Length: 83
Image (tube, rainbow, N blue to C red; front, side):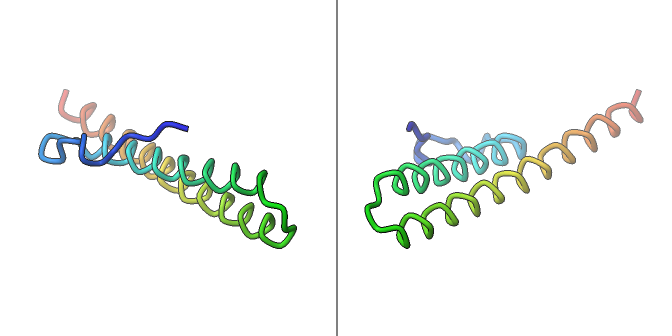
């Protein structure tokens, strides 16, 4: 699992789309972290909790991805109106 460090991001120059992409990557990283931990867990209850956390992180990523798509559509529509 690789993960972009936030200190490497130039927040003053980042676009809103890039910020959404960073956030999605963070959620997917957390999803994978919990999923991998679940695979290593020896206790069934611990495994179940970790898998639920993984699903929650996937849900967060899905919401952010939907918001990003809506932002992109909105920007395309605005650009079309400017033509």
